[in-house]
Amino acid sequence: MINEDCSWPGEDILMRDYHDIEWGKPLHDDRKLFEFMTLDAFQAGLSWRTVLHKRENFRRAFDNFDVDEIAQYDESRIQELMLDASIIRNQSKIRATVANAIAFQKIKKEFGTFDTYIWQFTNGKTIINYPIQNSEIVCKSTESDAMSKDLIIRGFKFVGSTICYAFMQAAGMVNDHLKGCNYK
Picture 1 (cartoon, rainbow, N blue to C red):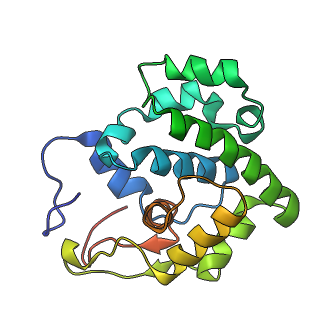
Picture 2 (cartoon, rainbow, N blue to C red):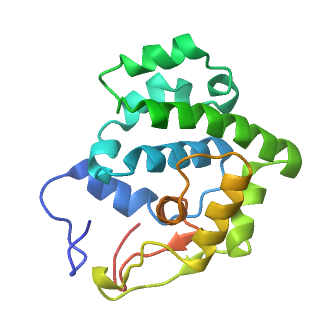
């Protein structure tokens, strides 16, 4: 994603801004947490750049990641999304998003907020790794393994440990910015 010297490759301003402003920052907003979880699921097998460049399209297509709206999607709405060329049209991932919205609602009902539930996997704190080079960044951890296992039990889809670790990075539960990186 980023060069070893913490410079940004090329002129992809959207990627640079995401890295510098959002990635690794502690996030406690339920709607945004659902957005990141959904986008990380859609990213599986693809590059983050592909997903990030379609982010606004995803926001439009998925009612700005309103969990209550998405939980109501029926077969007709799923088929509409399958025809929307502006997003990633993967039927399994679209259906998973609806299932995840329903599971997300149940967690909110049990814990008050999804934020309260999800941050328990890092004891409410950001795990700061400060790797020196990209090769030191792992793709999963004990915490992401536990998160994945619990989310699956609760009915979530596309939440393997690697996806959970990427989500933890995005949501600032893990900070894997390189040591010396000047993110904002």
